[in-house]
Image (cartoon, rainbow, N blue to C red):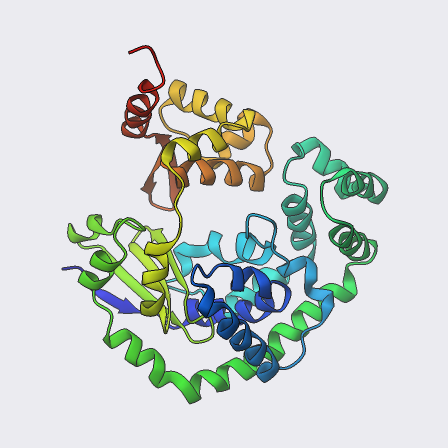
Amino acid sequence: MPNIKVLKDPGFLYDLNYLFFAKFNTQHYVNSFVDETKKEAYKKYLIDTLQHFGDISDDLYVFYHAMKNGRCFMTTYYINPYKDHFSTDFNFKFFKNLLSDTEGLIRNLMQFYLYDLSRESLEECFSSTEKLFSYIKASKYSSEEKNKLYEFFIDPTPYLQALQYELIEKEILLSAYYKEHYETILEAHNKTTFEFLCENVNGRSDLSFLREGEQTLYTSFCLLNKYCMNLFFVSEGAVYLLGCDYVSIISEITKAPKTSPLEDLCGALSETSRIQILKLLLERKEVTCKDLEKTFNFSGSTAYHHITLLTKIGAVKIRNEGKTIFYSLNRDFFDMMREQIKVFSNE
């Protein structure tokens, strides 16, 4: 069996950002429960948790507001991409240093919210507020979302200062909370084994590759985001972010309504860019996100968005080589699709 090592900092940073995400997306979390009987209790838990840690400024909306697909800027740009640092130097200091590059942060925000623009169009936004606002106005965002973006990009400085201040304040409060409740994490760790994760989350994640070689399964527990279950594949093996009460949510996963692979594929191929990506994979065998950016003139966030969706439905598979991820066609997936589609033909 592979080794399981506990990491403190990834779970802690997820909890820190969870506070802000919960502030702006309370209903999103509540709606994630399939069991209606649990929704009100969890909503109360979120409200009580936010009250315990104090007010959070509305100025942080653009950093933590979730898109319709559930993605928010902060996790997409400043947490998930640094998964290879989870087992080494990914701590609050590292996270804060990333955010200290204010020009890069503003650029990333533009790329996140205007992900369907070409690189040339984004460059126009960087140099012209008028051009930026015209793209925001033409976007499909709600009036509230548009107004928040206008307010931020008119003068980003006070919003960036509020972000730094509130992160520091909440980090101090959360550190004290962790010291007081660390036994909860130890209890969750003691109940977690490799076999348990494989057997009880079957179909959600495949950890079988860890049985071979010297790779490690890292776990990092969240105290606040107590139902969290996020798996990251890294060069050393895998990192599983688990809420301290994740066991109780496993039954929810099995109850959740699932779409069929055919439905997933049809949904993915409704976007022409993804069809072009599949054609490129057919031609080149393997590509990286950088290849997609250069070939299709995508921004980094657009390339990541499309290839992640294709990977999630099973149409594309990944291979790690050091810190580089290579994407290729999953031929087995399309063989299965061919069999499913045949039922609609004359045969």
